[in-house]
Image (cartoon, rainbow, N blue to C red; front, side, top):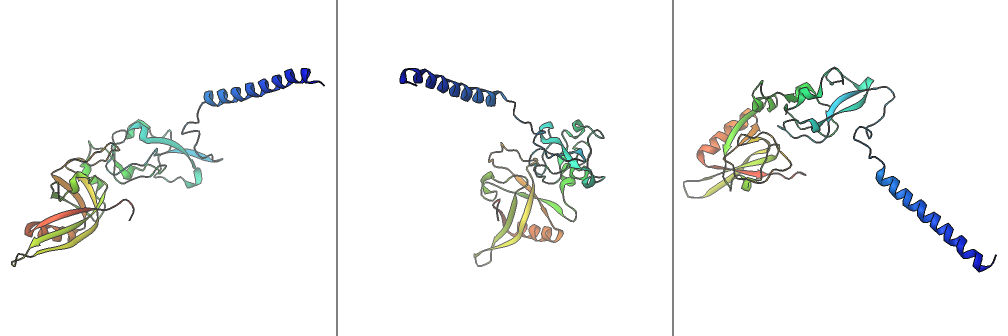
Length: 227
């Protein structure tokens, strides 16, 4: 085959390859993306239960986008799980989360509360714990960077008769229940100076905190997310 006949053949092959390439690109772009439901695990023997669509923080008010129905093995479903078609997802809108939930964790009645029916703050206090409010300012409140669901340490300071300043840690790993009157934390939260922070403590810690508050000042020490 001479060169004069080979060139048109090569051009035809190259054009065919380029056409196939662009068709593939166009097909990938127009192919519908898999929905959250499509990406759920597949079980041969399963029902769908109500779970968290994303991480839900303590005190968060539920919205429709926070919840999904997800396939769950029948043998792993308990009476506490909320099975599809037995309850409506809409019934959980505006309920408040009583404990932090991770993405994909089942929604249980004991972990949510309707704010119109009971005291929200009382509902999110864990068994055996108590709530106490502390007055804070820009310094003691870590410049407004403390939010509901954070964990803090408490340091009490006071001045002795000899004008010496004494400071000691009086409580560690204390969970923040609310900031002013807000019990939920949102992704859009920004630092702001608040007047009070309500924390969850044990009964004996309440006594130490009360004494420290009367005799001096209490400083809040914010813990990092990874300890």
